[in-house]
Length: 231
Image 1 (tube, rainbow, N blue to C red):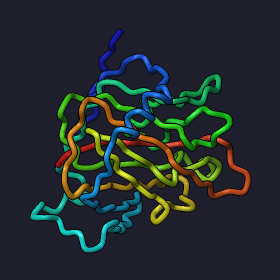
Image 2 (cartoon, one colour):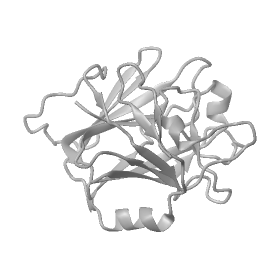
Image 3 (cartoon, rainbow, N blue to C red):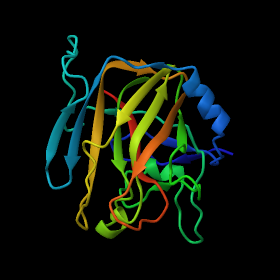
């Protein structure tokens, strides 16, 4: 039932299991019982052409003695993901939009939600982790970054809610989403929590709002990569 996936060089391995639907009830229960994460975070945005932008979501919050995070991610320890599930997944014959695509380190693949009525809002996914795994942050490649045209023709998450260990991290993405990318380029954002959270075995991610950068996009919200990490 469980098949191992080869480790990506320098990254944590994953153990692929059959992708099963994530129920709305399970996800709602996780967020209903969570308390807000109030320690603040910094977001560092990177692009493949070398651009870098730093945003602080909580002005006046200090790092409380915490060592500044490695900007380039060289000292990250990527979280081992042992299972993954999505509330919905787009099905198109001959194409793969599995939730596991967010773990393959390839920005030219993606998870695409498959709810024809929501455009991605109220959809989400879950990662299974080892119990009590420390999480210092997350890396996301938003949208479907296969090409300039594909990126603009699909919906992008505008707001994410992340539940880890009973805490709810609210991440508003609007300040740093790119409205366009060039062919062969991509970008990503690292969110650094000022204090770590500890997984109780499952990380839930919920899409609270979406946006698009073309007048007539495909009605699928996409995420190319999503990786928890510690440092």
